[in-house]
Length: 391
Image 1 (cartoon, rainbow, N blue to C red):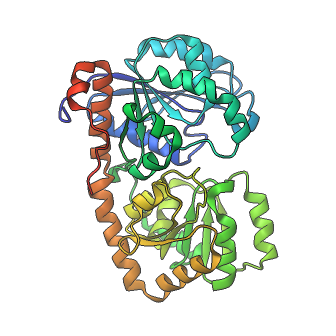
Image 2 (cartoon, rainbow, N blue to C red):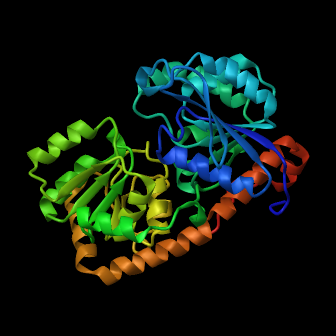
Image 3 (tube, one colour):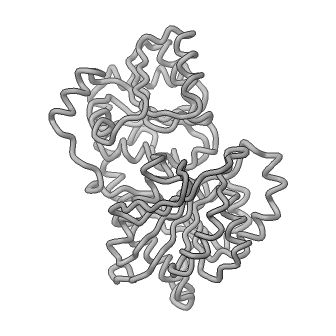
């Protein structure tokens, strides 16, 4: 099955997408589109954006249809044009692929009464809006009853999520992955420019600056260790984090803001290690960790019972520490800074793990199988597996 061309149309549905937003879920969608494209799958991405009217962006991996973003109550993006667009593009699709959590997507789907197979990639439980989650639960139950397959991104998250445990009969695990050839090589001029601006051997965070990313802990660890840190990204916590860095007198911390792809690649190339201090289960996987492995960088992450510790193996590809522990983080940073050979060994092991467990080729074959199987249930019944992950 993995070598066959499936010739299917798949509608990806998520609240944000490139080029407006470049978070981990957006990169995961991009990688799925590229990897399954090798199996004959054609993609459209239906999303919201800060646009005045519906527009279409042609990207290498997919046609992106962007509807105007109108409201964001409790961080739930909404736009009324999606109801019409969803019905329209669902008619084109053989399979609808929705990325969870996004409660508005549940509402759009159930009210549109579209009779097409639905695949869910379950990126995270809903944690912050617990009271709203209780009110939303009946809609979610109705929505999940209409879904054919639910994909967890790691065995760790599947085992620890109360929602996924109740839906185990519909679930399987397909990790997120990266195709190295989808990342441009670093140009020498860019590398020289980034080295001149930020130096090298620093500790790097890349991502959207959100509340669950644990950057307050990274700032405290930087203040304790005095080691250089570069924070690349923008987001809702940026202003508070900059103020906190001033309070802690973190002169070794540089906020790079949102950086272009070529600058990000140079930062990965020049850093000592990638630091990913997320401390809540909202961080279900961590595409940044995969990108660190792509560039053969050592990793530092927190043990939060999710896929982050599935990607980063303690003592093999990096260091795993307790969450919200600035002393432990500072010590891990000192360890890698003082032992470049260890950091290099972790980085090489990480790249091997990426190539064997999280390769784009593998992800593409697995998602192509899932798409074909929900279209042809008899084939699915013979191939179904709860967890398709090998170490």
